[in-house]
Amino acid sequence: GNLGERGLVGPGGMIVFQDGAPLLAGGSPSRSLSQCMLQNAVNILDFAMPIEESVNRPRYGSSIGDRGITIEKDYDPGVRDAVGQRGIDFDVVNPWSLYHGSFDGVHFEPGTSTMTACGDPRRCSKAEGL
Image (cartoon, rainbow, N blue to C red):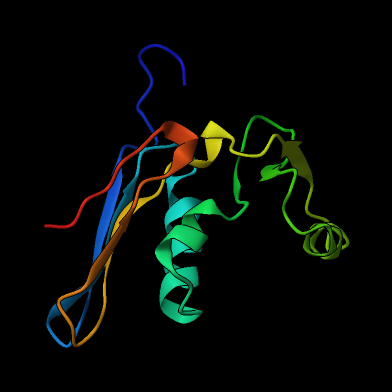
C-alpha cells in the first residue's frame, strides 16, 4: 500500500479445536496470509499431512498488481496448467517466496499429549509447543 492507506492484512492466527481440545494452532504474517493458512490447514487436517511436509510444500499466494496470482515455480505444473485453462493468470515466482507467508504452527495429535511444531524456512521461523 501507499503511505496513509489502510493496511489490508496483518498477522493472522488461528486455533482449530476438536471435541473441545486444540488440534492445530498456527499463524502467518504476509500479504498471502489467507492463502497460506488455508493451504496448510487443508493439508494437515483434511489430508492428514504431517505439519513439516505441509509447511515445506510449494504454495500459491495473492496477486501483486495485475501480474496474476503468485505461484511458486516448483508447484505441480499439471495443476498450474489445469487452473490456467480456466482463465486464471499466474505470476510464477521463485520457490520459497517470502510473498507466500510463513506458516508457523503446532499440531496436537488427537487423544495423545504429542505436539509437533514447525517453523517455515521461507522466513527463518521457529515454532514450539509447550
